[in-house]
Image 1: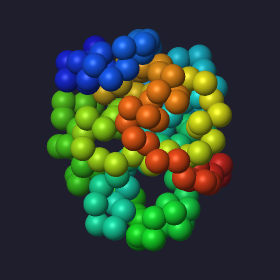
Image 2: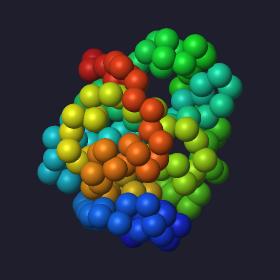
Image 3: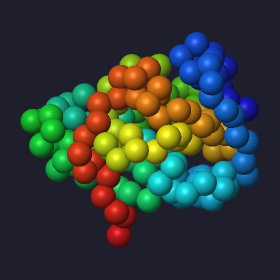
Length: 155
């Protein structure tokens, strides 16, 4: 079940979202398989410390975050954040199922290739819930800033 604060936010900001319930999936690739979508349509949020502040970097499930591209785009130092640094900010969401929403008070940066996908599937706060959103509407509503080459193929 989507946490009530997340669901209320989605209803206000993304009235056309669709909710998917799937078997427990811990990784973005597992979530894509459970939702029967390609990893290129599954948004993977990664929490990064950028210039000392937490941000959400969103890439395809098939990719990893290219910190150098984020640094080049912003001029700030970027490093992956530890779970202890951000877990409380996403309450009541399950750790590892954080939705990339401005609800949590962090800027969002997205791989520019995501803009070419009509709809994205993303975690909705639990390891069993996902939502599908219109990509352009999500980018606008969440003020997601596109970054060239933010996602690079995972090795």
